[in-house]
Each structure stands twice: as C-alpha cells, then as structure tokens.
Length: 512
Image (tube, rainbow, N blue to C red; front, side, top):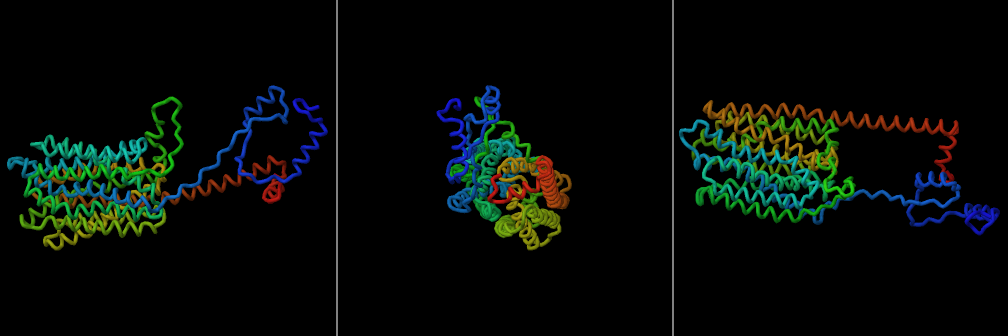
C-alpha cells in the first residue's frame, strides 16, 4: 500500500499510465509552477517526489496598452491647447508689458533701466523651465490632473498679486517667481497627458496643442495694448488672471490612461521609492544626455527677440511703427509651423526627428542675426515670418523626441530635466541683451550675439541620430551573440545531443 492512499502500488502505476495516455484538454485555467523552497522542504522531511506540492499561479503578462488615438483625447487636446496659449501667450507678449513697466516704474536717470526691467520677464520665463524637474516628480507622484490644477491656482494668485505692486522689486517675486512657478506646474502635465491618448498621431497632436500659444501670441499683443491704454497696467493683469482661472478648470479633463508601473515601495513605508523621485535610468542614454545639453546651448539667444524686439522697432522706426504686427507675424507662422511640421514629423522615423529640430534652431539663429540688418520694416516682417515658422517646428517635436529617446514611462522626468536645463539660457539671455543696449546705445550687437548659440547647439544635436544608431547596432549584436552562447551551452549540457533535442523541441508533436 502507498502511504496516505487506498490504492495498491500496482493500481497506482496503472492509473498513472492511463492518465499519461489520455490527451490533455485545453482549459482556461492559469498555469502553475512549483515553488523551489517547497521542493527542498519536502526532501528534507523525507517526502517523495510524488508528494502533493504547493502550486503557485503564474500570472500572465498584461497585454500591451493601446492608445485610443481620439475620443476623450480630443477634449484633452483642447484643454492642453488652452494651457499652452495662456502660459506662453502671456510670456511671448511680455514685450508689450515690458514697455508698460518702463513707463510705470522707470526713471530717466537710471542707466540700467532696461537691464533691470528685462529681469521681470526673463525670471518668469526661466522659472517656468527651472521648476520643471520638480514638476516632473509631482506629476509622477500625484498625477497630471492634480499637478496642473494646483499650478494654475498658484499662477492665478501670482498674477493677481502682481496687479497690486508699486515697484519693480516685488514684481520680481510675484510675477517672476510665483506666477511663473504656477505656470510651470500647469504646463508640463499638458505635454505628458497627450502620450496617454495618442501614439501614432503624437507629433500632430503636439503641433495642435502648441499652436495654442501661437493663437494667443497673435491676439494678445493687440488686446494688451488696448487694455493698457484704457485701464492701465494693474487692471490689465487682473483681467489676465481670468485666463489662469479657466486653465484651472481645464486641468479637470486630464484623466490618465497609461498603466502605472509596479510600485516597489516597501510595505508600511509612506515614502515613494527613490527611483520614482529621481529617475536615474534616463541618464544612461547617451542620446538623451546630448539632447539635454545641446538644446539649452542653443537657447541663449532664443528669448531675446520676444523681450527686446518691440523696443528695438520703436527706436529704429519711431513711436508710430506697428510693433504688434511683428509679434502677430511670429505667432501666425509659428502656429502654421507647428501644424505642418507636426504632421511631417509623424512620418520621420525614430530619432531622425532631431534633424528637423536642428534645422529649426539654426534658422532661428540666422534670423536673429538678420534683425539689425533690416532697415526697412517690410524686411523685418519677412524675418519674423521665417522665425515664427521654424519656432513652431522646434516646439512641436520637443515631446515626441523625448518619447523616442527614453520611452513613455520615463518621459515625464525626461522632459522635466530638459526644461530645467533650459531655464539658465532663457533667464540670462534677455538681461544680457538689455545690458548691451544700455552700454552700447543700440540693440545691434545683442541680436548678432543672440544668433550664435543656436548654430552651435544645432551642430551638437546632429550627433544624436548617429549615437542612437550605434547603440541599436550594438544591442542587436549583443542579442545575436547571446543567442549563440545559449545554443552552445544547451549543446554541452545535453551531452552532445543538443541538435537532436533542438530539432525535437521544434517539432509540434514533441513531448519536450
């Protein structure tokens, strides 16, 4: 008798053979595996191989996430479009506010007036990007919706507070730090959330969303000029606060869809894992490292025209020159560029999208150098039209390149660190241009120098496709070598019968 059963040994063997002869039926049950520690425990306790062992279900792999490519995603696109418009429309129209600040807080005896006033706009633009690494962590921990709505609320408070200040000093804090920090927390989730709804159309959707800032850049200069003339600077800022309130409501639409990565947080711990707070894996990509240093290198002169072009036109062509028309030209062609190049980039394979970004920053650099050479207003319009077109190309493919370099799960912090690195050139560029104007009496040298960094940075970015191609080639070679090593090891372990065993395994009727 077999211990623990009512069958004889012969009956047990007969039953085993009968079961083995019967074909297994396909069932929807999960597969099971035996725990190794349970096997060792049975052997130590004298259990036989025939003992019943604990079976653990093997969880099946989750199917790959499919992006909706539409549906509610189009509502999210409209909300993100408003976000880009409200945040960067106000920033790009700072040239109008710049002249109002000179008039409101300026003094004819101050030799560094333009330098000091330019810091308000530069600090604001710089803080939007400087806070981005922190925003990416909050986005990963709290989600896009909470982060965006909280940021819009902070921006609303900062803009309202700016309407009550009476000097430039407090304006640095209320407008340059508080308002800009809120804009940063509202802006970045609007880029990340698009990857939850779109993959095939991601470049096009980014073009549509970023075109929101173009639409605002076209209309806000005329609206601001009219408001400043009729109600003054303080009331104009209070009216702009309405845009931030609507942005807070728009954040409600950011419903996340991507599955969350497995949480490695220890049981009972209230702190998230360090890998979630600071994603080190993105820095292992050489292509990403080149990108995250090359883009900031190209942007030292990027924001200079948006701040100083209005004042340059006024000095060269007189008070009656249609300054707002130039910002409108940049805004219109930037919107067109985002739509056109967003569609084109969807058909450009992988990281080769970088070549579009390289061409865009180089053209922007050349156009910046052309501004002092335009002694006819029509020539300045042509320069602004081209600058806006390639500015749209540069902006709309920023997020898609990040997705290509680091993947969808890491894109939040990848974009955050890039924008954080961009804060330095975006902050220091316009004040340096204002300093040169105060010392030299002209903006010519400032615009010439503003065109050099985009050309240098663009040359750096050309390395990325070559680096990524070399990485992919090495991974393929390593995979091939690894497969060959496994086959040789299999041959040795099988006592020289590896080929026969492999052939039998490949046979669909094989019992192996």
